Every structure is written in C-alpha cells, then in structure tokens.
Image (tube, rainbow, N blue to C red; front, side, top):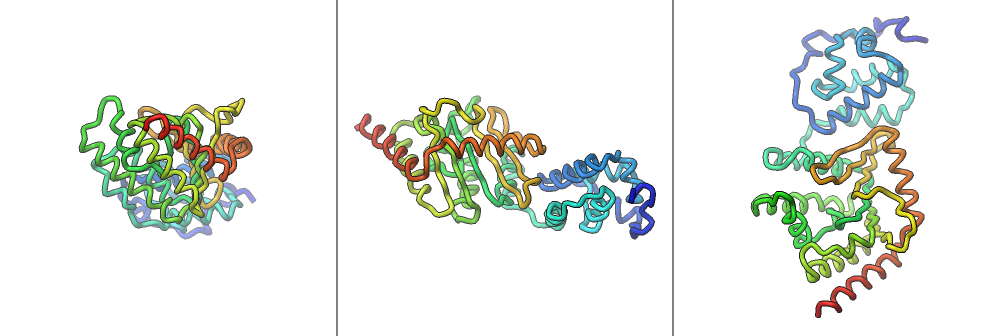
Length: 306
C-alpha cells in the first residue's frame, strides 16, 4: 500500500520541541547516517517535502537529518524506513546501531590540531569490520615503522614544522593499534614500486621491510605483493583503503591524494572498488610468495649499501 495515500496518522507524533533538537556539527558517522537516509528516500522516489508530510515534520527537519545536523532516534529511523518501504532489514539495523552511538572516539582529542580528513580516516577505521589497502607509492600507513612514517611526513610540500611531523606520527601510531591488536582483519596489497621507494635512505627502508615481514606473519594481517611483472595494473594509480562496514551498503573507500583523503560511499563507487580488489586478489602473489619477495628486496637493499 502506498504510504502517501494512507498518511502517517498511525505513527505517534512528536512535538515540535522534541524534533527540533539543537543543531550540531555532525561527525563523520552522523553525516553517513544522514546520507543513507537520503538514499533511502531517493530510492523510494520521494522528495524531501513528501517524506516530511509522511513523518509529520517540516521539510527543514528532513534536510537537517539528511546532512547529520539533527539527531535521528531509532524510532524515527524505523519510521523513515517504513515510509520509504525499505525492506533491507540488515541495513536498517546497522543504521539503528549508528543512531544509538553516543560516545566520541579517541581521535576527537586531535580535533583542534589535525585536519578533519585525518580524523575521518581514524573514525572509519575504528568502526571497520575489515580493512583492505592498496599501496603503490608508499607502504601502508597502518604498517609503517616510526622512522619510515616520519620520513614520509617530513617530505610534505610545503614542509611541515617538526612539531606537526611529531603530531602526525603520534596520531598514526595510535591508529595502528586497531590492526596490531588483531581486532580488525587487515589485508594489504602492495605494489613492488612501494616496496622499493626510499623516503629516508636504505637503512630505514630495510627496517621497514623487516617489520612488514613480521606483520605478514600475524594471523589477522595478510600482505600480498603486486610485482612489476604484472602486465596490466588491476587498479588506480593512487593508494586507497577499502573499509568494510557491518553491511556492504555501509562500506567506504578512502583515496590518498596530495591535498586530502576524500571518502567515497556511493553504490557505484563501492561496486567499482570491489571489482578492483577482486582483480587484485587474482594477480597478486600469495602470502608466502609475497614474504619471500619482500625478503629478496630487503636483502638486495642491504647488500647494495654494506
């Protein structure tokens, strides 16, 4: 039955005061929840005013919920899902979990000292069910040694003051805990170019490769190399991170570019990157062969600089 025809009289109405909660600066998770509500509405073919009539609220409130500036209760979420005839129960339940969240993450401690992009990366990692990375220029941040990471930060243009390098290093090491603890399964596809790129000299790179080998022997960390000999590169020319959410619709892709860490979560983008990762898995070396490959590069570097 068309809910537009039946109206929303059977839903309990909230007072204007209850719905008009104080507007806030939304977190990444709150923005994502709002974006998913917008997609739900658009898939149902409703405009904001149509949905507002069904909910018995103002169009302005619908807009504020969809950009994360107005809180969405679990009850309201279910009302929206019913109005939009969303039959995807796992998605609705996952969104309900996001609506229930109240605690702030550890990364908020850095909110006045680091760019928002970096905080957002930590936020999606903290809620990840699984993380997959592809690296072609430098080794994955979650597996970098302090010396290697510091050398990467030090090469920023324009140069970062040393206190900023130290701050970013501390932040990165804090982020690494989620992988090193084994709490989140992690797969790293690494192009041979990244294995050979020297940011701070052969000694630091050899140390980094040794650490990478050690990480690859952990139960929850998989390291697979994409060698130069692959005829067709099965992915983009930039590093990226694929973060799996509780349901596929809530996955996220983060791309490394020179001036930020943009996030992508549209169904078409997610489908494209899933295909890239499937192709990557089909051409990358096995875990054992990858370890041997990394050892050979480490030995080569050490031999050339004795």
